[in-house]
Image (cartoon, rainbow, N blue to C red):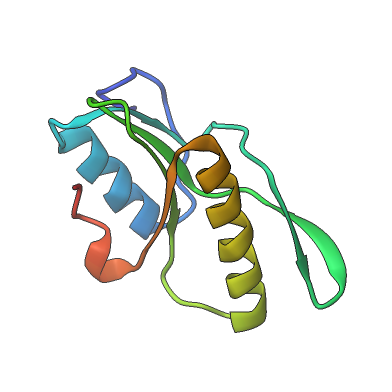
Amino acid sequence: MSSKTGVIEMYGSSYELRRFKALDAAPNVKSWTKRHRVMIPYVAEYRSHWYIPDILVEMNDGKMFLEEVKGYVRDQVTFDAKNKAAEALCERRGWVFRILFEKDIDIVL
């Protein structure tokens, strides 16, 4: 359960759980959720798909971050297409998209 929101959030990996704990512990984070309902269309290898990023974070100063927690990249083409689409959506909304690999998971800026 998030100490920021009081909501039970389901994690999909140990990396996500670590990120949840880091976000809860960070005094500059107002709230975060995995239940954000942000679905991003993207095209990879000539086919349309939908992508749901891992976490939406709201900072105390009002900044919004859409985060993707990654252990590794299986398919570089799909990974790049998802990231490009997520960056475009975030730019339109005034948010920041960030990809967090293991070395970044515990850092909250």
